[in-house]
Length: 104
Image 1 (tube, rainbow, N blue to C red):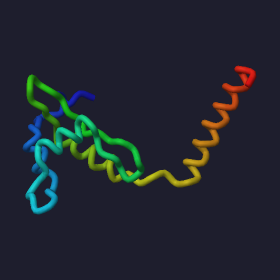
Image 2 (cartoon, one colour; image 1 turned 60 degrees about the vertical axis):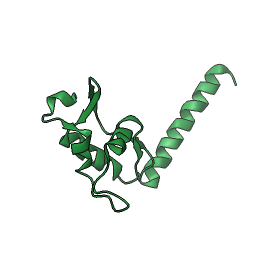
Image 3 (cartoon, one colour; image 1 turned 135 degrees about the vertical axis):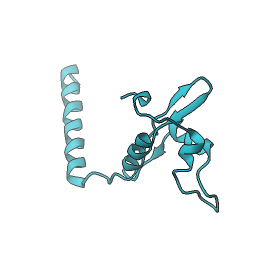
Image 4 (cartoon, rainbow, N blue to C red; image 1 turned 60 degrees about the horizontal axis):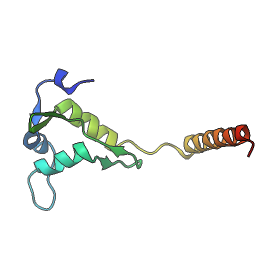
């Protein structure tokens, strides 16, 4: 999905004002928002989540909808242990199958 279809676009200063600040600041700075776009932020489940952004010329933009998706993704709870165990076992079976195919 293209952010250009989700109007209006917000510059990074406007996007930063959607978040509460830290250490006495009133809101997040444009630098913080840019870091969320380029580097991402680790969610509670351990995944790296990036804020969707689009660069137009020298400026970066995002949308309210992208900010909402970003905050929801950051707050997703880790998967239950049973599901994680099933994924690990499936991956382990795939690795064993690959090793068997190689004759190891």
